[in-house]
Image (cartoon, rainbow, N blue to C red; front, side, top):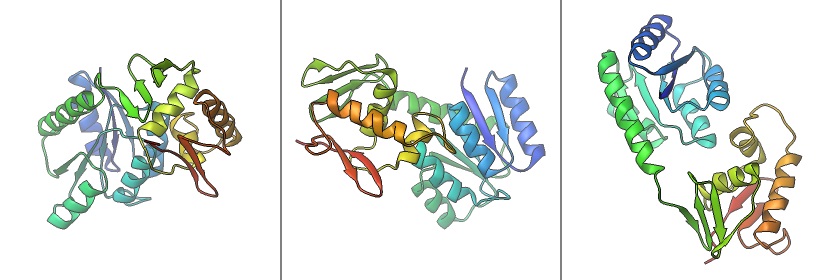
Length: 226
């Protein structure tokens, strides 16, 4: 049963979409503000997000950028803003689809099915490969130069998170939000400890890094040494 989060400040629209999608078998949650929606994304990990642009506390495109900083969850924008320039900017900011109000819930549900199909295809059986590292996400197996890595669940999740963002510097706060599901708290020292353990299992140290690089004052990135 796919889970959907609708971030929409219009209670009438939110309740209508929730009711119709629930009747079609979706598990639906709702949020009326951007910050509440962001927190729900981190806590509940929905399969897809429906996002309105005109939110009371933050512009929807700014929220979209925040979502993209912590997760690749599919986002369908549903808004009254129909200008071509706005559509292009929003898609370039990371939206997976764009629907202009007014729309039927049936049309919205068809868009949801489409992005969920694409998401399932993107996360299929192909492993993530970074240099000599291969990660089979669904089987939760990682190898280095053909040798199995004995990783704890959190070490594996951390490696997958970094491998999905090769060459991109991510902050410790981003890692806490996505891997530990703690966007507003938690000790960043936990990240450093797990990075240290992961480095050791990859056969490297902070002083002699091959895959994991620290960008001082900014964060961490995984690189392809080949």
